[in-house]
Image (tube, rainbow, N blue to C red; front, top):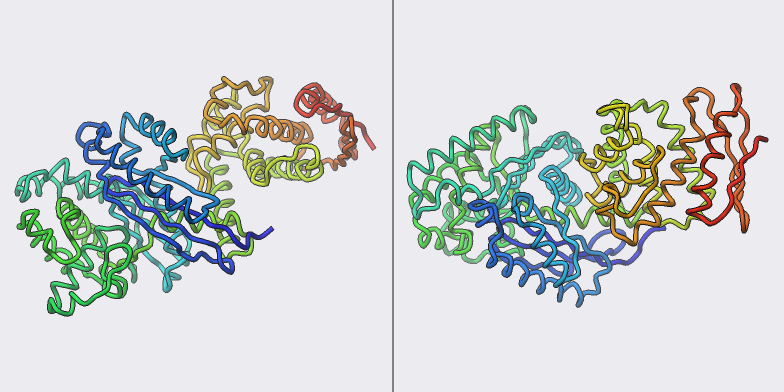
Amino acid sequence: MPVTAATFAAVDIGSNSCRLKIARIVAHRLKVLHEDREVTRLGTSVFETGLISPDAMAMTLKALKRFQKAVQEHGVEQIRVVATAAMRDARNAQAFLTWAKAETGWTIEVISGLEEGRLIHRGIMTYELGTAGKVILVDVGGGSCEITLSEQKRLKETISLSLGAVRLTQEFIPMDPPSEEGLARMKQFIARELRRAHKRINPGIVPLVIATSGTAAALAEAHAALAKPVAKAGRATRSASGAAAGVAAASITTPKEVRRLAAKLCKMNNTERAAVPGVGPKRAEIIVAGAVVYAELLESFNLPGFRYSDLGLRDGILAQMLAEKDDRATAHQQFEKERWESVLTTAKRFGVNLRQAEPVRNHTMQLYSDLSALHQLPGEYENWLAVAATLSDTGKFINHQGHHRHTQYVISSTEIYGYTMQQRTIISAIARYLGKSRPQPGDRAMRNIPAQEHTNVLKSVVLLRLATALNQDRASDVLKVFARVYPKRVLLELQEGRTGAELELWSLRKEADYFREVFGRELFVRLV
């Protein structure tokens, strides 16, 4: 069913700042209701010591509590809170996650650099016009830099590099103004990271580069202001991101202009940089590193320059929530298509025979539908079961012996577009228990799954086990099954294939005890 009215919130806990965006579904599109941003420098101590400092934790938590008030005031029904590079690197990240959970009730999801790039791509492609051709997306954040190649609004390749402005400043140019030696070492490091990017991304001629985040906004506005009379620049209105509205959004900042601006900024101290339009006191300390990254990147890839967009990670999160919830939204079909393509790519990568996996998936979906009155699983489990069925043999890529354990590891630790870490953990647990073992609360596969989901996982495991039992290496002779639900029993009727159905009959009857344990009903199986 389409969702006609719902309010979503996205929180991005970055290495330099925290951002909030709240939006409501209006006519199957999102209307922004509220935005907020706070510079917290969560990554400063992480990139120096490997630990989040108590002050950074307290400052970030203060911002989150302010965000929480806005979320409550706007009646938000669904929120997703993600953290990026600093939390990925911090050895004490779990301590902060636990503290934040206790204070706000929010579960913070630490996403990978690849997922960050994918979500930024989704945000840009959903709302930016003129992105139907070949486009490079660049996001230089506080801890990392995501570079993404898009063609016809489809993600072709993305990579995350350790080229965040806070990280580089802390490691190479902590002095004010930066030393020549530090700048030289930083440029060498940037060049090394960009060589790694070239191995993954070979864009050729790209007519459009879109840059997001605060560094790009500052560079675009600074260039526009320095290139025009101060009086005109001073009259520009400012957007929620801090960039001059109309200036950054419409103009292209060329490599020469970025290089010239970077050279000027390198010679200034913090006070002088803070006075540059678009930079300000909070970004003055890290703008040099960000400017040099953009200059080196544009020249390295022979790009024409960049156009700034105030869209970013939080917009991608909101767009994905809309696509997941409203099947009449424009982005829904594209999201589902891309998500399933990622599942199939993962299956092929780990040597899954899709011809054999398809009947298992089809039987799983049929049982999910026919037994819906019995299992009463939440709607999202239909898709998760389909993924578990398709990827249930990925563990054989590692070793046929004990491959169910390997399957659980592969699914939970592999990037699959459109699935959060917790969702992959649930899917991996469903696919894990197709052998002799049964799910137990203390198992490795179940340990990180919320307790309220355990019963749903158990039910899903049973459905997938039944579908697996129906497919004993018979891809060319698939059985038909008819399910009937009665008050005290469930009847499965098999239509015998060309090669009989004795093995499937025996396999299904073996599941009767576990079926009764989970569903509290007898399972009967017969041939028709």
